[in-house]
Image 1 (tube, rainbow, N blue to C red):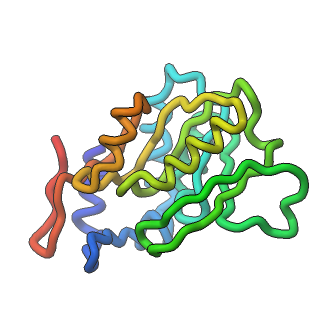
Image 2: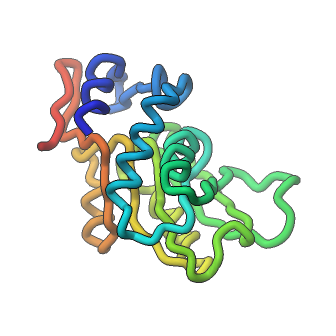
Length: 190
């Protein structure tokens, strides 16, 4: 998505440790109109997938998941990083390692929110090493549902997570795919 690449170049900031900060439009402050454009592109890409739910991990994946779900007219579901007192009943759970925060989380989704037979589109703001998506794939499997694919706003191709998921047969569509980035700039895959 050329418009996303241009927005990354104009508003994104590269931080130490291969961190790309896009908080001005995707994470902390959300450019809602642009988010909806990304959702429309995702709906176009996965129009043939029969998606019944969009699933992400809190917190930064929620915005893109909502934009995608709105465009597809299906519910957006997010996995919480901790089981809280307002989660009652049975839950699916999986352990995920966060690249950004260098910590492990047990993500949980109430069993009521993903059902056997659902076709679940995974959505996230970033794909680096693929740990969050692997946890979501595990949860979808526990539910007896099917992974329809993964929609990623920004994939860091140089970290290999997307390639590993594709090797497993997961359809991964990234709106912007970065081949390399450093203090001299960003190179997008063509």
